[in-house]
Structure formats: structure tokens, C-alpha cells
Image 1: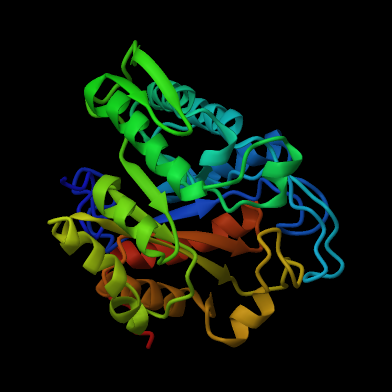
Image 2 (image 1 turned 90 degrees about the horizontal axis):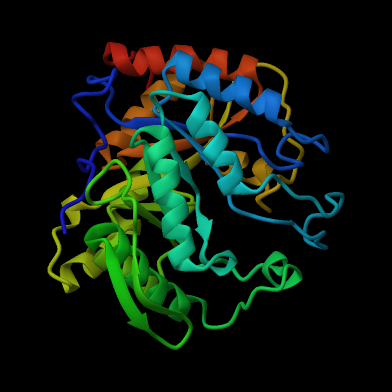
Length: 340
């Protein structure tokens, strides 16, 4: 399998041919990303349009239905967000250049044949800009609350990938497994790309998931905390999984989620909607902060380590924050910075 994207994420036909890696923006579509109030569609649209205007390469949403209150994160009550694929369809219609993806679609929530149809439709609306982000599902309480089965997550995901890749790459599939059954189903009409959108799989470093990544993914995503100097050693299991199936690891694009604190007052609460302790991450050096030159230099270091696409959570998470980050993008496009 050949990766859809070059290993370092640089697209020579993009508006940013000198940028060392792609930079995506994760929209604040859940409550408690920046406090109790939810960003509504009018604001999300304005943020998406501004992110495209200042030069982001991609826009991302997460696929969660509800975050139940947790004793681990005291003070953050049950909260939720907008349905991810409905939102993505709207984003596809109001943008024209940026790639669009989920980090990542929860396989527990949808039938894989229907999800493939949804992906082809969104790819059509966007003019071929979708990245199909997929994951086995974390088995969170929201899946149970909404009535979805949560057992054998990786087995279910393996079957779903066979169905989805058969439909996207070949146009049809006949499949009967333990969890899914489709009979002589065809993907008609096809989306704008003959082989469908590139497939991104999000996972940690479990051996079964890494094998699926090596077999099916064009891109791999992780929330694992990694400094640039840690990338090679941390991802050795991923590279080994590629080698085990006869795949050159260089054909797999690497994507990473990062948090960035821009200069000025902080906006995020101590515990975010994703269950991460941002303050602890910052203390460990896992949140990029400082002046634009310092942030750009650190992003270049990730590119040098082999990361081809970073997806950033900004603080402040507003139109103004997006505008402030534009100077970082300009530095990435303009050559080396003098920051260390």
C-alpha cells in the first residue's frame, strides 16, 4: 500500500509548498473545551472560515456523543458536543481549500457500510478534501448510554475496515463476519476520488491496532505525548508493525495532536473536555507556548523528527486565537526561525 500523502505531509501543489509539515486546527465543538458554553454553528463557521483564510491546512472535529462526569476530573460535569459527521458536512460546504477530518470517527457508533456512504458524500461536497479518520472506539460510557455495543472493539474494527476499504477502493463488497454482514453492496455514486479519501487510523501502540494501521492506513494519528526527540523511539512498535506486513514505514504519514498556549490570558479550564490535564501537560513540556518564533521552531523540530501533520488545540480557542496563530504559520512558510 502506498500512502496517499508524502511521509512529511508536504504537498507541492498546496498554497504552502515550503511549509515543513501540515498544520491543522481542531475546532472547539464540545462543551468545556474552553468553559461551559458551547460554540454554536455561527461561531464554528466563522472560526473555520478564518482558519482557512490565515493558512491552516486542515480542520478537525472529534466524534464523541457525551462525556459523563468523572471523579477523576472534579468540577467538570457531564457535557457533550455536536454530532461530528453532520458538522463535517456543513464545514465541507462553507470551506473551499482546507482538508477536513475527524480525530477520530468512533467505529462503535455507525454501521461501516453506511459510514462509507457518508464519507463519499462528504468528500463530494468538499470537492475531494476529506481525510477519513477512523478508530476502534474507546468504549466510553457514551457508547453504552446511546445503546451501542462496546465488546470486542478491535475485532469489530477489523471487520469494519474490510467493508469500508472494499467499498472505497473497489466499489463493492460482499462480507459476512461475526459483527457485520453486507450482501453485494455497491458504493454508488462514487465520490470525487477513484480510490476514495485517504484513511487515517487513530490508535495507541497496542499490537493488534498497529497491525491494522500497517495494513489499511494512509495516515496514523496519536494523542501520545511526545517530544520531537522522543518520536523515533516511541514509534518503533509502529515501524515494526509495518515491517511485519512488508510495508515501508516511510509510506505511512504520521500525525500528532498538540496543544498550544498563545501569549496572553489563558482560556482553557484545568481539565479539558478530552479528560486531559492541560496544566500537568504544560508542566511536562507537552504544551507548546511562548512567542511565535519559539512555537514555529518547535513545530519544525517535529517535522524533522518525521511528523507530517500536526493538529493543534489553541488557547485562546477563538477567532482571535486563530488570527494570532497566523504569525506562526507565516514563520513556518518563510524559512528558519532564530528561536531555539
